[in-house]
Structures are given as structure tokens and as C-alpha cells.
Length: 308
Image (cartoon, rainbow, N blue to C red; front, side, top):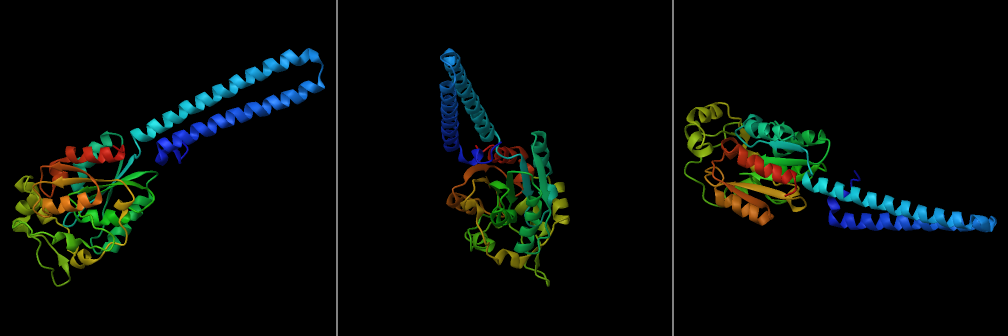
């Protein structure tokens, strides 16, 4: 598949048709000229044969052009139907990649190649680097999906050439030069939120007593308790580091607003996503919406993969 046909869309079709038709006509003129030169060197007895050959070769050139145009439309239709077969899922703070399992299973059954990033939560730079290592391994256009802190990561890592589009799931979406903390504190937080002050080494934990109400209210208490017990702390200073690039300015972006979110209040999400011009879907769910509403989240990811 010619790579330049995919991103140019209708423009590439018009360009392709023009090139094909001009090529067919030029090919016919060259053949006709060659036949005329040959004809002058032969006896008049061959005149009818030469003319017949010229007509036949014109038909052949036009038929070839017609078939190439049909194939061009087929390539374009395929590209529009499914522009990305790879999906990379990026988790947020206080959790790891295993939370994506339900979404992963849905996407795999749909035929997508799904990879889940596991990063150290030690700094913006190190988490972005870990994500880029996974993107390096993708074999074509990729949808990059981020939850919570993962949104900050995909904003910068999304500049990777393999990334075709971005999906923000109850996630931060800063601009170049902005940091996560700016947006986290841009509106009053919910009383259920439970991020504790940094420990002596600068790491942040989520209050176990508030984890269910503040992070995963629509999951069972048992599941929420396990997530709280197995939480992954994040180095607090990471939230104050500005992103160096904003991939959503140059690539299509989709967003899921978790309407019952107590960790990133919904209006903060809406403000970021409207500013970014994202295609926004609102889903009733907690901050753990990717676990509680996997079908709805997967649907948005598939829309991004298909360019809808």
C-alpha cells in the first residue's frame, strides 16, 4: 500500500487518478508515435495492421488505468475503515497496567494488537521514555491511550512517529509548557479525594481509607481494597514538570469524561478536552472508569483506531 495515500485522503485519490490517466495517455502517445515511425518504413500493406494495433493498445492502456483507479479507491476505503491495528495502553498514578485487562481483552477479540506499558512512576522523563520504548516496537500506526497521569505521558510521548491518534481516559491533557499540577488544582477538588502528602523520599500514596470513595466507587469494595493495597506510589515532583511537547495539537485526540470522577473532577476534564478540540464521550463512571466501564472505553478506542 503506498504510504502517502493514507494520510492525504481525498486529495491523494484525485492526485492518483490524475497521475494514472496522464500516464495512460502518455503511454498511448508514445506507442502511437513508435508505430507511425515504423509504418513509414514499411509498405502500405501494413497500414491497416498498424492502425488496429494502435487502437488495441489504447484500449489496453485505458483498461489498465481503470483498474488502477479502482484499486486506489479500495486502498483509500481500507485506510478509512481501519487506520491503526496497534493499541498501546498507558496506566496512571497509584495503579499499574493490569487494570487495563478488561479493555485489553475486548480489543484483542476485535483483532487489535494490544500492548500495555509498565513504567516506574519516578519522573515524567522516565515514564515518557518507558512509553517510547514500547512505541518503538510497534509495526505501524498506533493508538496511544492514557488514563489519569498517563494522559500527561501520552501528551509528550505521542509525538512518536508511530502514533496515529490519542485517547484520554479521565486523564490529564496539558499543553506544551504546562504541568499536571496546574490542571489538578485548576478547580476545587472533591472531598472524597485522598492523595496523601509526600513521604520522606518524596513519593505520593493514596489514602487506603479513601481509595474506594475517591478512586473506584463503582467497583466492589473487595476489588477496590486490593487496588489500594497494591497501589504504586508516584514521585510527587513529577506533577510539577512541564511537558516538552503536546502531541494533541498535531494528531487526532479522543477523550472519555468520567462523570462521577472524584480524583480529577469532571469539569477539569471537560475544560482540557474542549480546549484540545477532542472528540468527547461522557461515560458514567468513577476515576476507575476503564475498569468499571470497559466496553464504553473500548468503543472510544476503536473509534480512534478507525478514524471515526
